[in-house]
Each structure stands twice: as structure tokens, then as C-alpha cells.
Image 1 (cartoon, rainbow, N blue to C red):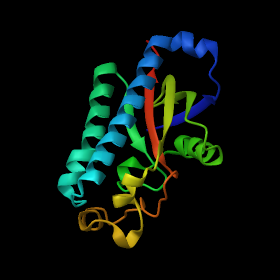
Image 2: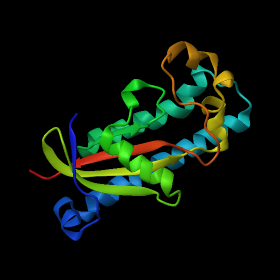
Image 3: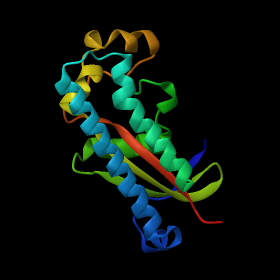
Image 4: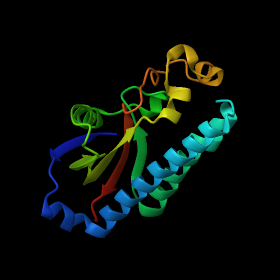
Amino acid sequence: MRLTVTALLLIPSLLHAQGAETLGKAVAEMDRLDAMRSTLAATFAQSGAPADLEAFGRVCKPVGMAMQQAAVTNGWTARQVAVKNRNPANAADPEAVAQMQRFETDSALRAVLLNTTMNGRPGVRYLRRITVESSCLLCHGALASRPAFIAANYPQDRAFGFKVGDLRGAYSVFIPAAP
């Protein structure tokens, strides 16, 4: 996937070209997914259930599946990206890394919108921060306390050592320009 930044401002022509409704839908969907993540993780943490593969299937997996379904339904490309990723497929590309550095510098910055190109196709990219909550620490806290299934299934895991309030990563949505 090749991405190129051509602007980093929420400019009226960008909104007109993509349609405020389409962008609004993507923003609302990422907000919904983040609320889903937060609710599922908090419910899991309160249950006292072990942080195991079954818990992953009830907490993290549904969010990823819902994101993919929204992408397919709407013609977007969507994924979760991180600098400190667990799954190498979720490694942030250079464009996302630059934006996550902005998130790190400004904890009040919730999202950014980029006029960009993906695989030769122009469009907009919406990146929304994912913030670590206390329930996230069951799997993303200290290296030594990671659940066994994570250590076994993710030998290149870098998604640990977080504290509440840290930037975990971002939801990334690319909306191609209308042909």
C-alpha cells in the first residue's frame, strides 16, 4: 500500500469533494467502534474472567470484524494501526506514524483528516486516536504479565508497557474519491 500526503488541513474543497455525509459516516462509525471497544473491555475486566483467547474473541475481535464490515459496506479501507503493534499486519505506515507523533505531542488531539493517495487513488484518510484505558492493561500492560496466548501467538509483540491514557494506536479509514 502506497500513501502520499498532499495536505493536512480540513479544507472546504476536501469536504465538498468527498461529501460531508460520507466523512460524517466514517467519523461516527469510528466513534461507535471505539465505544464498543471500551464497553467490551470494561465489561470483560469487571467480570474477573481470565485474559485468554476466548476473552480476545469476545473483546478485541468483534471490534475488528465490525470495522471490516463497515469498510466493505461503505467502500472504505479501514484498519487499526499502531507503532507498538502486536500483529505485524497492524504496523503503522509512515503517514500514520507521523500523525501518531502528533497525537503523542497533543493529548487533546482526537483525530486528523488527510488529503492523500492510496495505491494511486486519491481520497481522504481519517485517523482517530485509540487511548489506553485501565481494562486494556490486562493484555497491554507489563511484558511479564501478558497472557500466555499472546506470548505464544505473537512472538514479535510490541504492544505492551502501556499506562492508562497512553496512545495505543489509531483507527485508520481511507475513503477513495468518487470516480
